[in-house]
Length: 115
Length: 248
Image (cartoon, rainbow over all chains, first blue to last red; front, side, top):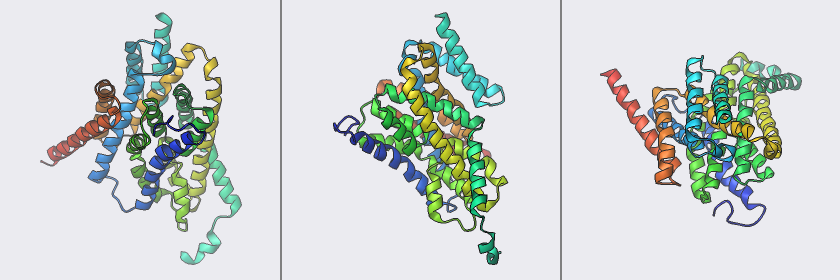
């Protein structure tokens, strides 16, 4: 039952619908249903947010340490250095997402150009 | 003033005006940053072997970027459909509290439920942040029109961005291509930190960043779920401990 399991045009779309659409919109619909029945700072929501945050952070870590595409040809130290520098720039320069992204990209490109 | 409801319902042209104002709000700095993250996503999906139609379909149906990145990651690692759906679902639980917080802001006095269910599909980090920031300055009965304009524009525009980048991705020089692949992690690294509501969110994030690659080496296939459960659980324990210390 993997993405390539069934050799037909519709299977990947069904895979995306069930594995992607259903798995995300179900939570959105539940949110509408719960509406104002749940307190924003209840312990359950803190736990749920912590689990979700750690999972997404794991995705980010993997994208940097085990990248795909043209990033494969760059050194691991350069990728971690660029991401780290971008994050520090974000933290100390008024928490602007744009600042973090630009700083990381500049370090990456300079690093690729030097090596 | 329930007696006035029939007469005070906004006209179609007023609704259209606020819809268009929502459309305009999509073309803001947060909206452009989001588009840059979709540039990165298009490259990621193409690299994973998805077709153009599948990639654009995924943008429209799933919408939330972390969920899509997890889904592509699951496809890349050859996960089965139940495993992929479970990982995506776990990465999207955060949508529920976001919608819960948004609904009271969005709802007008006469808003039908189906409108809220429909609009909830547009909820993802960027549209949510923009909405929470701007909705309170908008007349209550017109907020759904505004959010419909904002949300639908973000989705459709980024489907277009993804399609265009997918088509030109192969003809890009390696340096540009490498820079594109760094966009998605950098966007999440910064926006995830900024959206954390409590210290536990930052703890969870740091643990996840370290545990993800570590577990990928030790137990590939269980890396995302494992990092989520261990990192998130530890962060929650930290939250309870610091709470107890604060009250003691």
